[in-house]
Length: 95
Image (cartoon, rainbow, N blue to C red):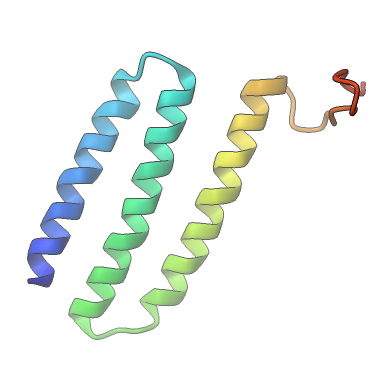
């Protein structure tokens, strides 16, 4: 049963990779890469369960945090063109 779950996760990872390559906009591609990262976390957990190694849970949690922070950084870069700028409450940007 767990091998079927791993196979299903691999299929969904392939579909997310196709969406990342064919996405019409940058935001579709970023969402597909984020989905791919989330599926990678799930695959790490399933493989850790199959092999009987609970330390893979720690690895998957670290990867999930890196995936989240990386997605936020990429979206901020595409929105503002720079990672160092901060937005003012009235809508302008600080230089």
